[in-house]
Image (cartoon, rainbow, N blue to C red):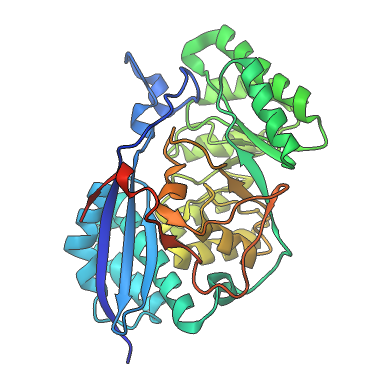
Length: 391
């Protein structure tokens, strides 16, 4: 019987050039604090974690995680790897439950679930390679000829620069766009007007025949969001993303129940049961779990089925190839988020510097190869001089 022989977690610290973000480029949960300086600092990440699961015949599956990589690596090395080594990689459901239940006292959310996610993604890549099939074929197969994607950048900044960026993306064939708000409650009515000015400016460029999504990144509160929603309605956003902190589920329920702008969220939810609760309570009109936080592909498939029963579409957070395989294999996943290839700024860009093979969007779509086994990515050597790697 084939068995898992080793689990190797590495932290990739980016030491290369970065683009300093503009002030107020994205609202966030730290805006509510009495702080000086860069409120977004703790939400940027210039580290990544890779997790390589090798079987007894030398085949390696690759997983990854982006949250608190050093802590996640410690959790994998000390707790999760010993639970996995010696198991049959195709017993993925049992392995998932073993990792989850053996660490239930402390691993249900956050670091623990992120570690489970990294290993689980690696297992699916490994299973694909062992069967000679792409992961999406193992999950249900092709439900789309190609995957529509939305351009996910447009950080808040000077209006003219946002319009230029939107125009460039439009010229490259994108038909859907996501923009960030730069201001929240602490900025008062003036900040509110600045937010609306930028939404209007992007709409001027892309028109109303293309989707526009709006991102708050937990930087608002209920009162502010209730005041903003009627003002945003005329811009016809497809959704308003994470208007309040992730733990305020009652707030999501109240805002979604206003039926003015669809509310999306789930990026900072860390379990199948947590996502089920969001759906059961009507907290979101669009669910956006993050596969390398919510428990990996095994958990994501369960969540997709629950969401479909509630007729709530699922759009996994962030681009990244593991999400594309889930989107391809599920009718209830209509579109993928897509971060364009760009210099390192917030941190999402690191995926392109660590891995080879992540699909590149063309004319607003991306494609997965029916003949490429596993996830279809490998660890790149092109940018090693810019990384400090912790084994």
